[in-house]
Image (tube, rainbow, N blue to C red):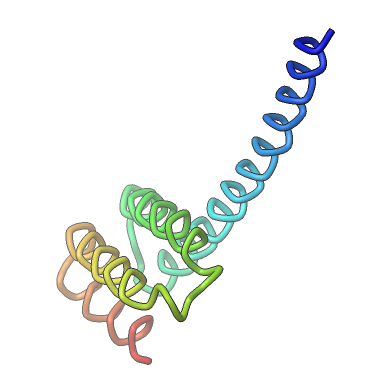
Length: 108
């Protein structure tokens, strides 16, 4: 009987943790999609570039959401993530697009 109760408890705990993870993934996907579409219009990207930008932002947003709960303590990690995102976007975009990206999105 104890094993059955333990198994049920474990199953419920796993179910709730999976739902939380899915919610975080959906939020990261939504933000990445929004940013990719916005950049696609602003920088006049090709379809394949928009998809690659989406993938780059998806990775960035997933990591950022994990760290953003305590932004003050994670400033160094966030700066590293921003540099990694910029480097990835530099690979995706041509020189003109990347310069416009820097001036529009990294001007602050």
